[in-house]
Amino acid sequence: MATQEGIKEELGGEAWDTDQIAAEMQIGKTLNSFSRSLYEIGKVADYKKEFGQIQWDNSCEGFYEGSVYLHLLTNAAGQEIDESSGLLHAAHAAWSALMNLETKLRAAEKQEIEKEKEEVTPVFGQYITENKDVLNFT
Image (cartoon, rainbow, N blue to C red; front, side, top):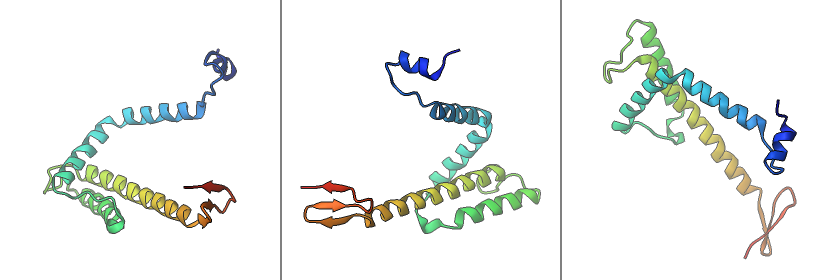
């Protein structure tokens, strides 16, 4: 059995990130396990794109979460197919859950970038970060 050190030598001393490889393998397994579901979600995304109903900004905060509940409750009430799209309510709910998550992640990323910008202080041709790192600029 190959060890990480042995593989490291074979790669010319390059580090081999086993955690990253394991994560990538798990992502592949997940995508393969849910291929039918993801296909249905893709159909919902196509439908939403066709009608211009995809927005990535915070103006939709709360909308996608509400949409998840709407489609789940409608499905639970016995109506499996959305009348306007002809697609499964469960697929609409899953798509809305993904959009809700993506919107929240993008907002958090944007907030982190803005926070990093605020932490940089200009000083005579240099930026000094809160970590006291000096970044020269010309």
